[in-house]
Image (tube, rainbow, N blue to C red; front, side, top):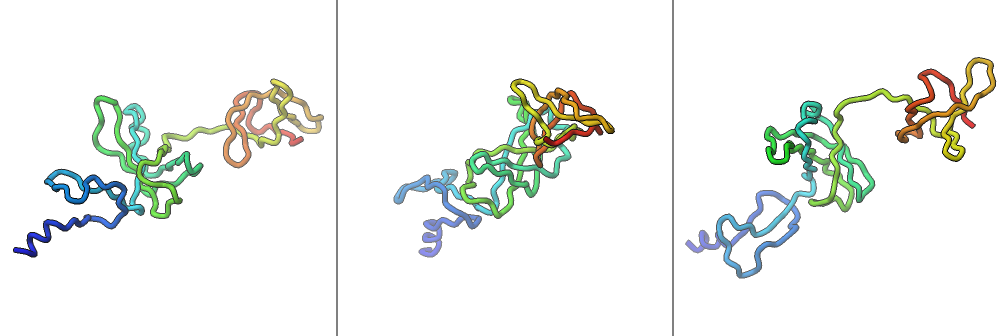
Length: 182
């Protein structure tokens, strides 16, 4: 009887982890349904996001994704993406979970702000080297060359800078035209 009574005074966690918050003080009465501790497994973190229902058909087959952590200026590839099979009728959204790898950078803990980046399609963009862009006041232009002609300055409208030192061209150039690096 003493061993049984003593086992009721012992608290054992179902997982190995780190205690993040103590919700009961020494000497308080523990009762069923009342939490005593909060703990997490640092090797099993995930990011959770709400996705609007109109975007759900585009990501329902998503098996990959990335998690951007603004405080770390880092993007981490998710090991698994799970779209939960239930929708929140009040918010018109569905919850998506992205499991994170075990080797996370220091400072990534439960409650850290994160953005879940999911591929919902692809688009072809016309890009050129950022170094080819000439800015003169409000004018954005590039020098183009065709055949044996002299380079000519042509106004372009540009979009956002992409990876690898390239910039998107929205108007002013066609695919296959040659630009000159100044």
